[in-house]
Image 1 (cartoon, rainbow, N blue to C red):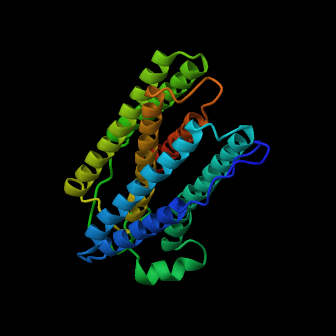
Image 2: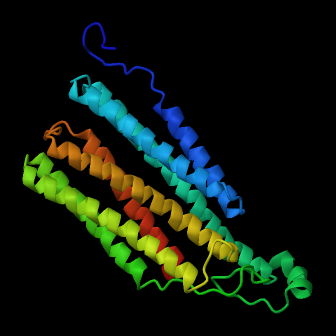
Image 3: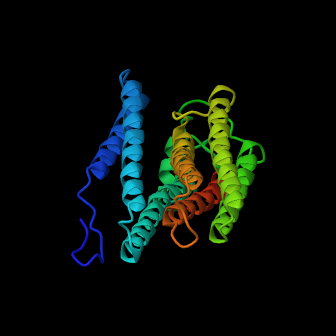
Length: 288
């Protein structure tokens, strides 16, 4: 409701966050079931993804309706900005944990398996033929032999695509601030196209990795880390592309002005974040 003096709009309690939480938990649980051979898992995963899209549509519609009704002022705008900042900070810790798992496995666990420090006896008696090779699926070659994706193929192309999309979304933002509608629309259209192109290429990469390289979820610790890191990032790019598409549609409808466009800025911040995460993935997962 609006404040008695019109100073601040307090949104009504929303059920969309809890629906989103249920969708995300269901996605994680059903995907885990699918990986462990539970037949119904893939159907539950599809349903959970559908619930997530339903939540996004409903929540976007509610926020857009309130914004277009003129209910938001500078104080609400600051609240949105701080909310987005803390969300991105939480995402930094989220991906930081995954990069930490990669570091722990590659730089700490692997030397221990080779007998470094107090683990020497285990190496001598259990895995005397194990050598220092990365990537690895462990001393017992869990999942069979596999090959890795070449860094300078699709991953390098996807890096170029994401970096270019960071430029186009910034160019679109400049157009919005200059009230240049044509620049805004073209920049956003290019960014959305590049985002979905990235997702399409990553899906193709997964198919190639599984069918041609035998790199699967079951390929030991490297397979798990590879799909965990790139998969979660791909999910974020997909969500970001959908949000950019919503911003593009709102721009076509004339919802933004040079002074009032935080929805655009918030999505742009998120997009630059996934760009930076991908650079880390390209360097530490594909290249080094």
